[in-house]
Amino acid sequence: MPHIHELIDFVVTVFIVSPDTQKVLLAEHPRYNKWLPIGGHIELEDDADTTLLKEVKEECGLEIEVLSDKPDFTEPGVKPLWTPAYVEIHEANPPHKHHAFIYFAVAHSESFTKSAEHTSLKWFTLEELRDPAYKLSPGIIFYAEKALEKAKHSS
Image (cartoon, rainbow, N blue to C red):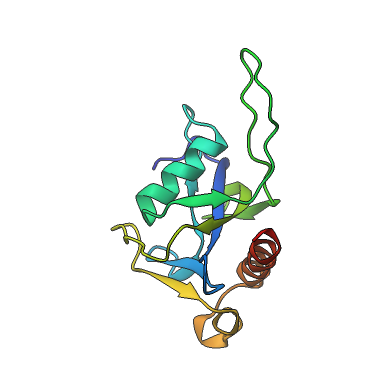
């Protein structure tokens, strides 16, 4: 997807936890040669919630429950959105940056469908998240562990 702005874009990422085995789904991204969560750019015609569900469907095909609060009211011209678990800004092909809304979710099953966008998808155990062989960044490990904690307390 082309960038909306040359310096910064808004993106969503979601750390999806399996329903039974307490694993986190990560995607091996061929462009960056890293394991990353499911996610993508928020298009001008979409909001964060729409993008989140669209990216999950396109990249892994899972049905999910987002572990977040959303106000429960209706009002003309207002659409309440899920509250991200975390928000960060990070470099993505400098000087370009991503302002990232980070969400946690639980999948209804572990049966994913890999898109052509990724080299592979894998359910990571807590031990694998910490295994240096996977070369996961400290941020990915932090958010994945927090997603596992949140999923454990929400079940």
